[in-house]
Amino acid sequence: MREFDLIVVGGGTGRDIALAAEAHGLRTALVERGPLGGTCHNRGCMPTKMLIHSSDVAMEVRGGARFGVHTHIDRIDFPSIV
Image 1 (cartoon, helix red, strand yellow):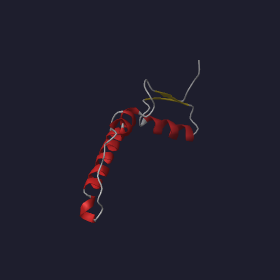
Image 2 (spheres, helix red, strand yellow):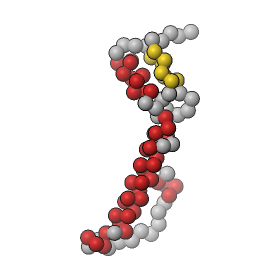
Image 3 (cartoon, helix red, strand yellow):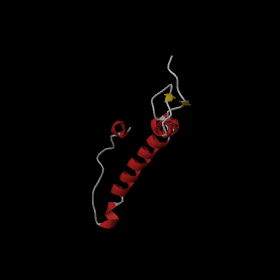
Image 4 (cartoon, rainbow, N blue to C red):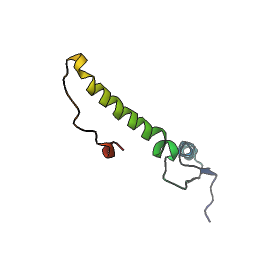
């Protein structure tokens, strides 16, 4: 059995803790049931921000005429955004 100085549960912000502990010379283990990155990176904050950013871009393109830029959007490829 391997021995560790610190075991961190959760690969979201726990990843930062594990990396800092390792940088200080601690033998560190990181335990995560799902994909590393936690809720924010995989299901929460980051995916939401990407959807909002794509929406903001579409709104800017649609409003371009007020700046003398005349264009239109043929389609929005939602699977590519996701």
